[in-house]
Image: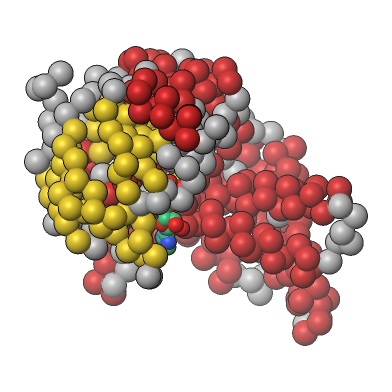
Amino acid sequence: MIAVYRPGSSLLHRMPAGLKVLGFMASALAITFTAGSVWTQPVAAVLVCAGYLVAGLGLREILRQVWAVRWVILIMLVTQFVFLPPVVASANTGRVVTIMVLAALITLTTRIPALLDATESSLAPLRRFGVNPAGVGLVLGMTITTIPVIAGFAATIREAQRARGVPVRITTFAVPLLVMSLKHSDDLADALTARGAG
Amino acid sequence: MTSLPLISFDAVSVDFAGRTALRDVSIVLHQRRIGVIGSNGSGKSTFARMLNGLVSATSGTVRVHDLDAARQAKQLSRKVGFVFSNPDAQIVMPTVAEDVAFSLRGRGLSRTEVDDRVASTLQTYGMSDHADAPAHSLSGGQKQLLALCAILIGRPDLVVADEPTALLDAANTRRIGNHLLDDLEQQLVLVTHDLRLAARCDVVLRFDEGRLVESGDPTSVIERYEREHA
Ligand SMILES: Nc1ncnc2c1ncn2[C@@H]1O[C@H](COP(=O)(O)OP(=O)(O)O)[C@@H](O)[C@H]1O
Ligand SMILES: [Mg+2]
């Protein structure tokens, strides 16, 4: 769901990670705070497309990134349609999707250690409020790593249940998934401690 | 051989919430390759995990290479590289190179130094072609190789492997076994159900219901174990 680094030599690849993280934060804030304007979405969309083209990833990659978060989009749309007028609900969702596609552009063009360093230094001022920047960076990296593993668990459970003819229901699916994920996080915690990050 | 540092257990017991995992274990080890065998639940993992401070003794003392395992757990985790059975649960970062580089974080090395060491480590284990591959896309055997790279790049003094080949096929078991038993310079503690790997160690320990029931020459320890479980 979260993009993994694609090696390359484009301008975006070579740009310092800190600059990219700051640029991303600034864009995300701009998109959020200019929500009222009809111009926000078209301008953001054009800029995002330009970014993907400059990075040599192509416009198809944007579609792949959007497709990767299709469930998130669906959940956002459904929950918002219940409470908000359709126009507002779609605009909100559009903004979040734009920000996610932009985030993917950063992770596609930046090695994670560089990204972690950059995130950590940009969060350094928050240290006095009790935020541990190294911890935040680590969680970020591990989240990206763990998502395909959890997706793998989900696939395994689905296969095993289909083989035994278990009807697909959220309870019969969620419980084993939770158990496997908790076991995994236990093992991962051990590995982290063993690798000196604990 | 005798120049290798010591691992010593002195009257060590470990209790987990009323269950005794290790009972009164005492031994001194200076061999390079130390094999550990025994049935499921016999205490092998508990023994192995004490060597890097993941588990601490309820009573008794563990010393590993001049460090007190209970009091100097943090230093110990830097000196000891630990390979687990489940390759997926050892990968922390998204791509192969990133995961290996993760082991060098916080050591104050420059970016180029880190990159050089990552490249040469991957090269040594034939993983260069996968440097930028998403780690989860590797095969089980490659993931264990990655785990090994991620540990060895930190230049540990002791490598502990807890059933590192349990989830591998025969060819990958041999490959990982060869790397651990033949290529390493540092001391190795290898917990395994693969008696052929255990036979290649310099000494084998056998655990049974939390007790260290035997230690010594691999051939005789393994033979008695096989006879009793025939
Ligand atoms: N974290 C733990 N909590 C409770 N019991 C444990 C824990 N770890 C191990 N044990 C128990 O200690 C005993 C020895 O386990 P272990 O060292 O994992 O054996 P082995 O690796 O030989 O299979 C078993 O009875 C096991 O159930
Ligand atoms: Mg075990």
